[in-house]
Length: 288
Image (cartoon, rainbow, N blue to C red):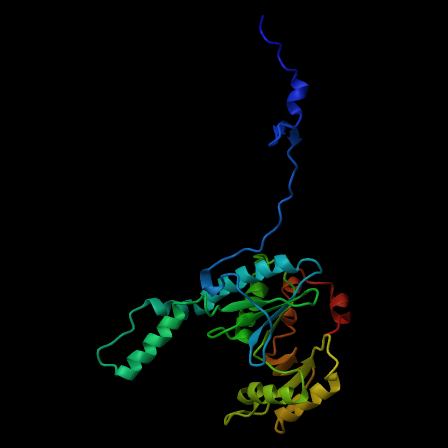
């Protein structure tokens, strides 16, 4: 007699598995965890720094609460793409044969040293994520040839020109920092002198209208008024304050950057606002 056929209803039951003692156990369902993408292109290699040091340059970014890890992955992809777009020729020069018979030994040695450094991007990544104990805020250190202000401006300018081509989903505001300093009056003064000099103190510097917008978070050593006064003093005479029709805007978040007159037009470098503009009334009610 043929064996009885197993009822179809039982086929939907989870199959039992024998353990080492011959007992039956059921396989437990496991939930896949999201992982931050890792990529070696552009010198990222998923590296992470421990702290932000005086003298660093970089880019601050914000996102919604609870989305920090995924946002870091988005930023890596975004920065990698634009590093190739903007600095691709410079980054690939290391692969070209730049030697010449007419060069001196010193020049050849200098070129060789530079090329060797560029061939080892993992030791000095273009962008290094710094883990922060602040919700919704991220920071990436940058190194040459990345210039944070021009880099972020290009990203936001492209987003404004082609808002239908969304490169990010979670990233909100990007804030470039040309130079970071100690969170003290002395540190602020030193950073201000270095960053502002090319814009306001050059031999061909004409009169400029400027504004200052400091952002202080989790900080008890410097007051907003003191920061504005120190930066304005460093700008010096020969330039005028204009909070709305400025030529240059000085932003300060544990460092200093000077951005152009289209900062507000580009939604203060807020990609989320560029892609999905808020109603006009809501935008005007927001603080800087």
